[in-house]
Length: 284
Image (cartoon, rainbow, N blue to C red; front, side, top):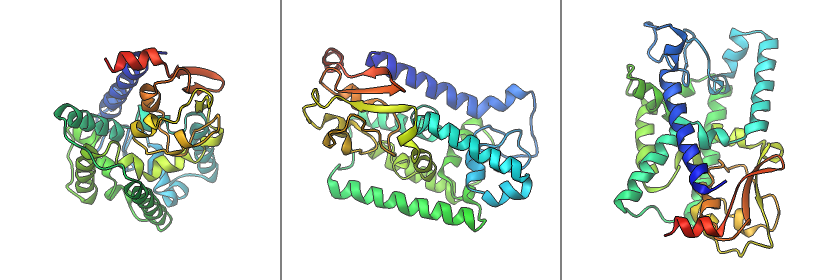
């Protein structure tokens, strides 16, 4: 698959996902006047038509309180299956927060404004922040606090759908993250606790990033292009370089100048492979 097709399809899927998550409630023919957030993606109250899986991950106490043990077990099993099948493809193709971050990064690119440094110490500090945010997320979850009140995703589908928005910690946090995302691509994705938890199943996920070590020249182009700062993609000599952080955005493959050095595959089927011809066409 050529880079224009892959990346064009990715932008189409992200756009349609945002519209569906923001306005999908209308497809049910219902309008919930008693709720502030009648959207599919962020229903953190019991009046919603459908609950998103992130709600119960941050409210484990309510998963048991509102539902039977059988339902709770079923929920966890379905979550694990989806994580195994798709991994962080959700982050790269569906997540509204990721989509908006890609848009602000595109704006920065058009304006030719310099982004943050990619020096090793800075990258390592971001990784440290990721574990801190994960600790806060899990602590809040187990102690029964409301993570939704500080979740930065509250600025996405709810605001776009035009519903009442409370200016709380999460909203302000989301604005700050969008500003940071202007200078560093996918800043929130690099520290997102939900994305990290989904990515833990990367070793058995169907989606893989594979590398032909004989074709790779270790030019570092893949690392420079990667929004998730995955250094191992060019340093490792393994055939499978899939990592917890990978969102399968395909940027590493688009910037790779070598034929068949990198590829995205579903199982053993390659769906997007690096090509010198595509690389030269992209850089014309």
